[in-house]
Image (cartoon, rainbow, N blue to C red; front, side, top):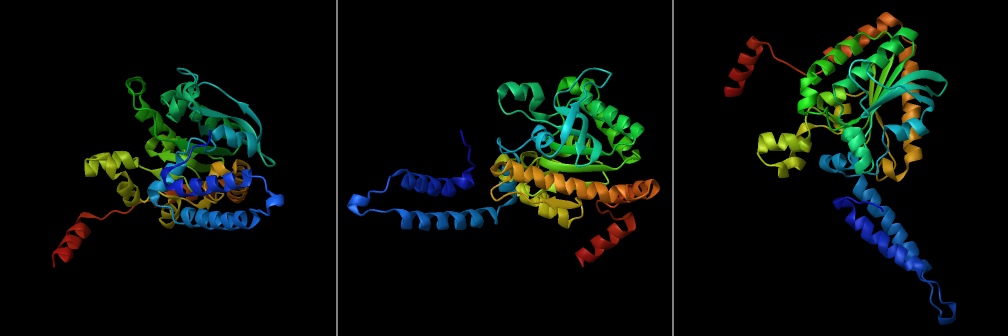
Length: 332
């Protein structure tokens, strides 16, 4: 069953009219032909699709990033990579199925690939915990990264999570500490690291596997310190303000690219990645390969220094003296 978003309803209605018209056989004996009307509707449908998808709001892009038919990590492992061999467990507590990882081939490169995985139905979502990892998920990811570092294999991460799991069990097993250790250790990995946000990039849950030499993002994905709903609940005291929050947070791919927080935006087919999974997977593979080879061409010391500068350069701050001067000028 196809699932459509609210802003796609005009497209769906026009498509339904076109399908109904195509389903009527031509009646030549009565001199009736629908070819001209079908051609006209096809042209209108194409124009409408381009109009809708070329002017998406930040909130509409968030909805596309969460689309239930959007390709997930395992879909990319099947289409953009080859020879994937999954590895399990953190060797400390257990195996978190919200994080998948193992050896794979990306083009001609043997890599360690790690990603967050959501489910397609209720049963799989329970198994994958809706893509929200526990501490053991981040510790499993770190174990695989350290293995890759030991054997000189590049690390590729695919990010698609609303955030790390905030439950009591996760807190008891130190979720914040697990993510913090990953941030520190990923900064020190001597092998090339390339990350790609393929859907949702939620808060520390995403950043826990997102410290990389190159950070890519799909055109309709988002990357944010907080969800639009969470931001709306805090600042507007009403989750209905989520569209305004999404715009204010600057979380979409174009905004992030403009702010220098991501290195490249991977284009999606018209209407989103779920409209052509193969084309999206091909685009992701090509982008990952290009950036991986660029990073591999750098020396180890140069690569580590560049990674450090990259993340140190994020954000802006004012020294106390400059802050006072800024306030004085504003008052004047």
